[in-house]
Length: 258
Image 1 (cartoon, rainbow, N blue to C red):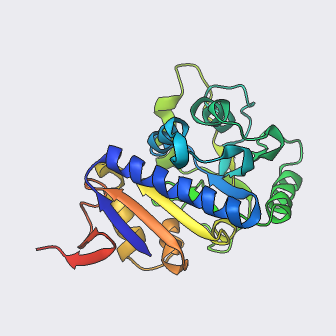
Image 2: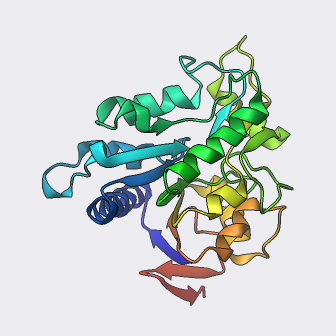
Image 3: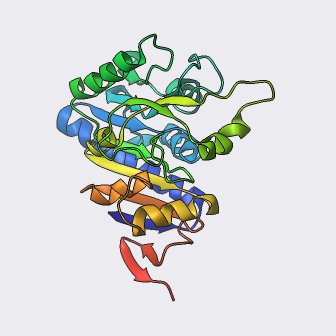
């Protein structure tokens, strides 16, 4: 893993936008198209805003991009404000020229969810795999909606959400709204097949999960610890998210904290 600690959320978001833009340009030049795995949640919003705002030679050519999102709630239609399809349109898709037929979201409204999950895996394979997968991390160490206890080789499937995740996400649902207790998520095995991984973490609320993921044992009880096994995992942290680490990480160099 390459771990970088940035001063704050803005610096983290700018660094992430530069890395994503460079990867889109590099893959587009090599193969004519870049396949980007997208994440939702508060952490990647700064990244998406900076990608939209980039211009000139630094601007990524989204017309050459195909996307696959990590997850979606079961039972929320795409027009629901708390669906991840809605989130992606608000923060990225409505502002860039990705062809509509290259935008892929897990189908949480499918009548046959197992068949829809299998079809999602096939679409990823047909696209040639994911070049760069953007990730966040949950406060309980989950990746996408792979909760603690998930198989490290799991594929796209329906996941029951833990009480911790439900509590963390309850703030997004208003009074009287039904909060989904299940979601469709890419599996850890699916995520690990991406050619490169870029995980972002910000804030003290993620510090313990970051410590367990990066410095603890590889275990299903901290799903994000599987990142230790990927040959091209790049981790971007702000100072608060890195505050529980035994090592500081700057410019890819780890130093023991005093």
